[in-house]
Image (tube, rainbow, N blue to C red; front, top):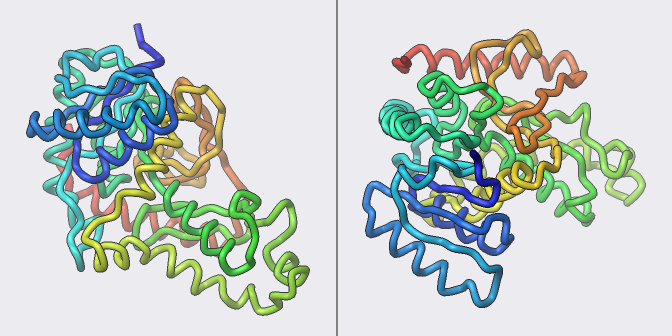
Length: 315
């Protein structure tokens, strides 16, 4: 039986440890197990984060083994090689696909019953690998997708218009990577179109800045990696938000990476599409009325992902 108050993180590098820290701050779970190929690394991260518990929420955080995560409600996988300066997420595919297969084999060995949340890059490809290797229901295997990209989009719009980012409804879909796209046709601020809102606040030229905002979102990871070597705070908070939506059964809509089964005329690949998530994982993939141009860009993004999928041996 699944313990809804228990979660696990596999991979305790910058991203995994930041997710653990974010979950501790939120108090989402009562038990969090950390697993890493280097067990001492998991022990060290568990110790370091646990020392902050007096300032946060009561929680049992400890290093563990696969045998201890069989009843975890959410298993967050971040293990894999890091993206290096000048390297795309898709460049990581072969080595990280091999690592993912080993992890999924262990998860199956101990009969895990929870939701698998894939964060390792390239996340769309590795979500597909995890789904096929596990044989689990598509509802149970999801990727962090473009949740972070969407947050970046909202942040940049908020900075331009000097408005609370929580009032901005806009999102990124497709590949979490170079072929992703902003769905401007659906974007609004408190129900007001971006163009009209720009006019209302005296920013008449805002619509002309949308392309620059999109490129800034798309290239954010490259910019951060060039400056500090890795990204982890943003994705740490994004993954924690997804895990929280699952355990709280909040039926939240987020653009996670999910298996498409005919939606938008696409199938047999995982990519980011707004999806309702709750305690059972991906409850419903939403079909939204994108513009014709956006549909073509989504199809191109799917094409780019499928080309990479063909290079990965699965099953």
